[in-house]
Image 1: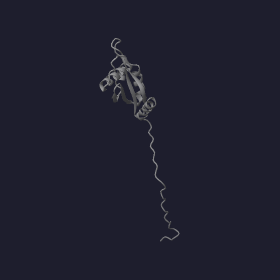
Image 2: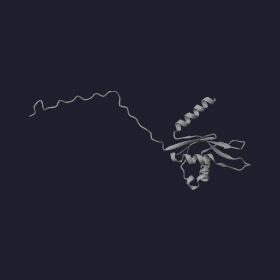
Image 3: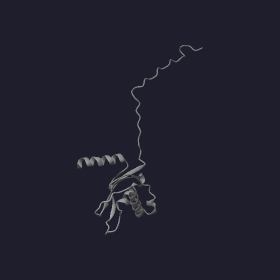
Image 4: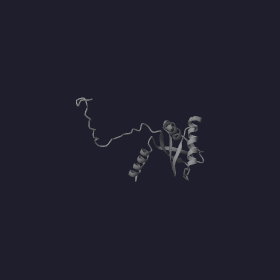
Length: 139
């Protein structure tokens, strides 16, 4: 038998104080985003569509990087008038911007067509927010 001196008294449970705080760190996004604008010498300004955007980007990537460039995955997120938003893998953003920014097509007589990179980055929400803030001060 156990003596009273040998029995350990039970320790009371510690009371929880406040709420448990959890954090999550996002290391790096998998994708990067770019906002492209159509530039054209022709008088009647043409609007973009998804197929035209994809054709122009593929042409630019092929001209700049050859077969390797045409293999870069590009998702067309939104097309509105002469502006479009694209998504590319994060590591491919720099080659895409270099290819698209330096690309032009068309003959002198018909008018040249090109794409201008107006915004790019790893987080779409910051790009959209920056452009909305710019509109606020310009109006």
